[in-house]
Length: 155
Picture 1 (tube, rainbow, N blue to C red):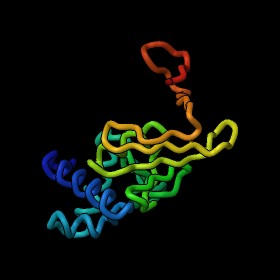
Picture 2 (cartoon, helix red, strand yellow; picture 1 turned 135 degrees about the vertical axis):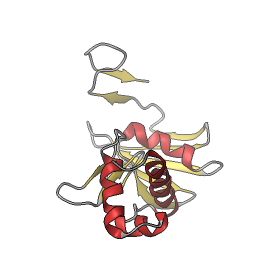
Picture 3 (cartoon, one colour; picture 1 turned 120 degrees about the horizontal axis):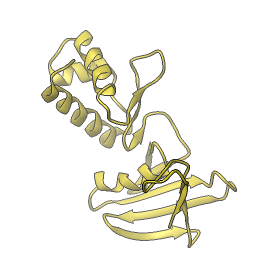
């Protein structure tokens, strides 16, 4: 297993790259940034994915597919920052966390409702909600939340 300090540096490097470009680095690029050879970079990516963070590689590859709160592959959760749409979120709830990575900037999440197909949009700046369309939104999780097995809506 890769040293925790190197995993921390790798985590920061991947997240910084995703914030900057909307894309995760290839393990060879990460290796260069960390000052290691490409094979070590590949091992670092795999050890990072195995560390318990909610991130993963595309099945059967060493390509970063998802890295919280971002998804490297397009999802229905489109993220626009100051008018530029180049990011995708892992899920609807992670989409709301993206704003913390862009302090002082307007962050808009656009996604179709997975129930009815209607387009939803929420725009924030830091902790301020700038707009919500439609005016009322409800988030839903199919997983157990709050200590019991029942699914609960979030309002």
